[in-house]
Image 1 (cartoon, helix red, strand yellow):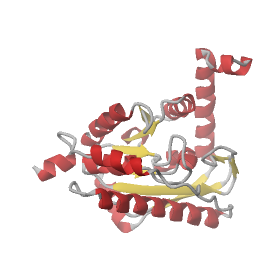
Image 2 (cartoon, rainbow, N blue to C red):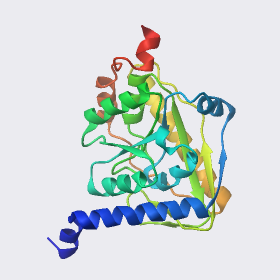
Image 3 (cartoon, rainbow, N blue to C red):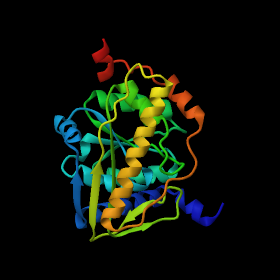
Image 4 (tube, rainbow, N blue to C red):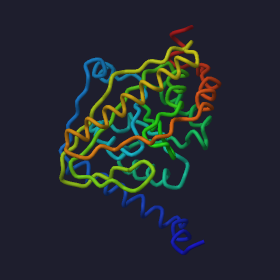
Length: 260
């Protein structure tokens, strides 16, 4: 093991990295001139302050703080249990966000239960449907399954900023630089019926993917940044089968109450 990896395992180093990340996110948020555009039907859901799932690409995660400028504690982000995910989680916690640990690869069932609890309490939950490791900008079935189980809509959102640096990571992580202008674009709600079959689940997944890619491309174009292309690989068929198995209603969820 290299000395760099050993140092990365020290708890003091992790705490310092999290504080640094939190400070940088706060600096970017305060020095960037953010603007949001929200369709009427999405605005109505936001104003109702009911539960929903916000879906955004992993590479645009850093921008989501600007979507909740006044009440970040109402928004809970699903963060990977991998080391890099936990670093992001600690950075977000410094900004007042609550996080849920888990992903499609690790801690999935526990995360689904916790998401259901937060949604039942009327909170919003944020999911990166291409996380934790891709393929980039290709929606997996997790967000669709969670929306069906909880009986809540999915609201796609993406964004871009005029001063950014695209990292050479799998997600082409968009590192926002201070003192620029940012644009957040919301999509229209996607509903997943409680009785959705596999074909309906796939249709909802394709809707989510198409909306997010369209919003991302439009935001990049309008702030003058180059378009980031999605990965060529599509999700494996087992993702849809897994979603169908996990799609029973969560007891006490809004969807369960409506169907009772």
